Amino acid sequence: MKKLIVKCLAILTLFASLTGCTQPTNSASNYKWDREVDFLIVGYGLAGQAAAVEASDIDPNASILVLEKMPEALEGGNSIASGQTFVVPAKDDVDTFHDYVVAMSQPNPIPEDYSRWLAQEFADQIEWISGTMDAAGFEVGYVGGGPLRWGSLVVEFGNLPGSNFKGTSAHIREKDSGSFMPGGLWHGFNAAVKLRDNVEVAYGVAGTELIQDPETGVVLGVIAKDATGKEIRIKSNKGVLLSCGGYENDLEMQRDFHGVDKVYTSGSPGNTGDGIYMLMKVGAQLWHMKNQTQSGGYWLGVKTPEFDSTFILNMSFKSGSYIQVDATGNRFYNESKTYHRQHMKDLEHGKWLDLKHADALPVWFIFDESLRANESVVSPWLSWPITTENYTWSSDNSKEIEKGWIIKADSIEELAGKIGYDTETLKTTINRYNEMAVTGNDNDYGRDASTMTPINNGPYYAVEITPTLVATTGGAVRNTKSQVLDREGNIIPNLYEAGELGSYVSNLYQNGVFLSEAIASGRAAAQTAFGGKSKTTAVVEILEAGETSNNSIFKDLNDGVYVVDVNGKLKLDIKIAQGKVALIQITEGKDNMYMDGTQFTNFVNSIIEKQSLEVDAVTGATEEGQAILDSIKDQVK
Image 1 (cartoon, helix red, strand yellow):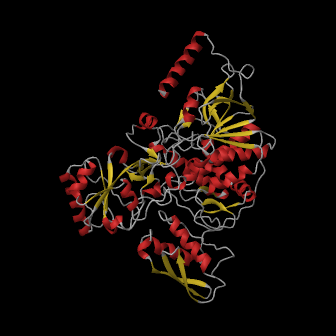
Image 2 (cartoon, helix red, strand yellow; image 1 turned 90 degrees about the horizontal axis):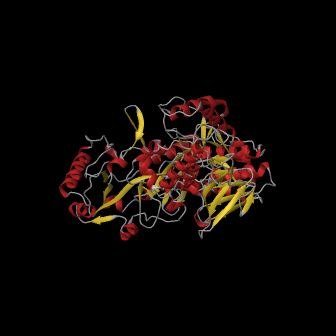
Image 3 (cartoon, rainbow, N blue to C red; image 1 turned 120 degrees about the vertical axis):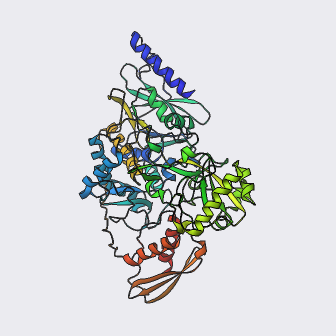
């Protein structure tokens, strides 16, 4: 119905223009307004926050109103549920980073001046971010803890030109905490917004339609609805910024643009394409609506009846007694590769392409008692139900089995019946996998033998997994001033767009780009609307790779062995010799760890090599790694 309304409106508009008729004038002179402000922002994620702060700093006397569709208890948008990384390229290596941006955009490149602007802005904005956060009681540091260091980041597509750029992965956390903070970017900018008396955030109020003067094309304001359904007409003197996210949670749009039968979001359930419908009605030109998986990738989600958004399947498992099967009951790919390091893309035919789950539905994750009892099947720190609705998935999955989210059976035959699969096919699939696990050679899909264990320890379990989105990139074409363009490429006056709605990302996505873009595009909108630029800056020290800060906790320690307790689940011995850490080993609780042996070895070797706790996070075990670092910092005196 929504699409039909948009199409009919477009036809009526065209008919009116051809016949010389005009629509009723909604100009400021004869329109009845319920409220008037200087700048109106629709959507209170990171892009909206950055725009509000910038606008307030340019003009502290301006009235700035932010409309947020979700209630205050569910605030934060995708920003709060994300991985919390924004990327910072070095100013002396912007050209290399630009080459990487261009390479990732192929075969759908954005204009050269756009990619140049992005690269330069990502490098320059760190001083503004740091100064703004400092005033709000927050700080910028490396996402894995400690200060920023060049070279501390995961480059996702190392085979592309420019992938050797000098950069760092940045994060925002409470001042002097030194450690990872869930939702840190959103919380930091929220604190900054609260310091500005001229910014008001209205929760539970959704923008539904733009009000445009049909004679001049100027956007005058917005029609919004509050939580009771009451319409509010808000005039905005300097323009309207749409920063209300994408269309991850609109299945109808997903089917229309991507042909996906079933896909959900792991982020905000409020992202239902509101901004896109509003933009279409005023004649905006759309782009990036059909990026492969909207660039962020089809992550593997676990959808439950109690939550609108999905959990995310764990990215690695200590036990190898699991497989994934497609609609036919057969395995269909290598389940053990670290696809999350490339935002769920795989290198095929020399190209980074989507995983096949959207075409293989229904897909089930099959496992046995060995895995069930020892590790959660979902990520313990990612996704909206965990970060925002505060659900804690049980470490042994028992609570979720009781809820019926995980199917349990005493035999493979019983399991097949419960999930609607042909019994003989599923048995054959599992038997073949078990044989290859014993021989240590996956002849079908090349799975690493170290990740393969026979599925033969009943009971047996299955949980359905679906494609899930972290973001979309589609929306209106916008320029580097965040101004929206119409279908002829002209600026629609007083209309701006920022964040993932109409993102500049046109194909592959590098970790940290979305949040960097949200800040840059939000600020650009405010600067354009107010005709200026704020001056909040701070000097940011970024260490060279391997360089340690002067406050190393090891240099003043006495020689000896220190025992460290990590949240009562893990004990470590840390040997100090001549003011340096010489050895870190597990003495108790190894079976309680999310990290596997290789990950832990690499993790502690980084500490020893750098003689610092400022080391890279462990993908898939970020919280556990940070808990170890925090415990060492607190207990080794």
